[in-house]
Length: 76
Image (cartoon, rainbow, N blue to C red; front, side, top):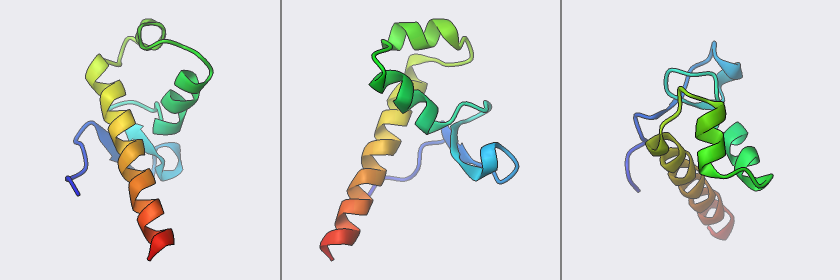
């Protein structure tokens, strides 16, 4: 498994330790919910000027790796 992205951080004092885009209070789950609700990447970037396209890619990569880890746990 690859190492965690420096673009995603978990800090106990920010959003109760949820995984967030580094340097922001925008959580991975926030971005995933925006995408799931139908927002395009361009709309998210327009609404959140602190985000860059690479942040959204890091969120998707983080979620995919987490899903993979969880599925491996249930198979074992």
